[in-house]
Image 1 (cartoon, rainbow, N blue to C red):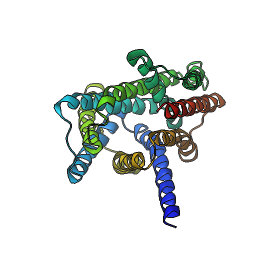
Image 2 (cartoon, helix red, strand yellow):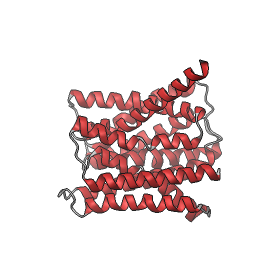
Image 3 (tube, rainbow, N blue to C red):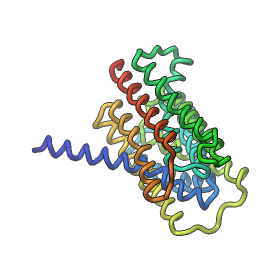
Length: 298
């Protein structure tokens, strides 16, 4: 009975994580349709950073040593701040579900970086996964750039989403050597502080004065992004990393883009074309093969 109860708790945590991770894109879309994206994200980080600092203090997390501090800063600049800056900007131009599908390509960029910079040799299954994944990304981007839905800003939105995936991958590659040496809460709090500083600078330089008014949906979406996504999402991720193998946690993240697509369609009236859905399915299939190959290797 205890084992069955534990299995149900693990399943409930997994479902909650997927829902939160996917809905993060939809909440951001609500904000950027009314506010400039960098100011919206700056507000989110400024509000989230103190909460994460409090959790790091409450959990008595060790702060990164001098050797790892630079990696935390780079992760904050690229893996968190840069990634979300590009993603929120993209969501002001294209549907949140499409951004979620494109940025799911981050593991493909990480795998490519490992091949190019660290000499890692993927297995045949991993190569197939990479090929399928990049094929899906090409289909997603090609349909939009080619005027799939007739919006001239869509090509820019796709490009920004891809830059977001590349930025996150660069941050993850830089942070990877420190991952086993730093406490997750303190590292996340440090990254959030760096991201807040980055986004405040970007917002002032590129968007001018901050917005002074907002509708109720914007305030609710910001509150959701700060508390449920910015704190609760990471808390669930850390719990899942303790309960499941890394390959399982990675596979759960693959469910977030379809969830974001469904919520965007049902709640925000977003429409995706067949090429978008086919490209997303191809990308997620490739990522599944890549994760399976990594699980066998590791």
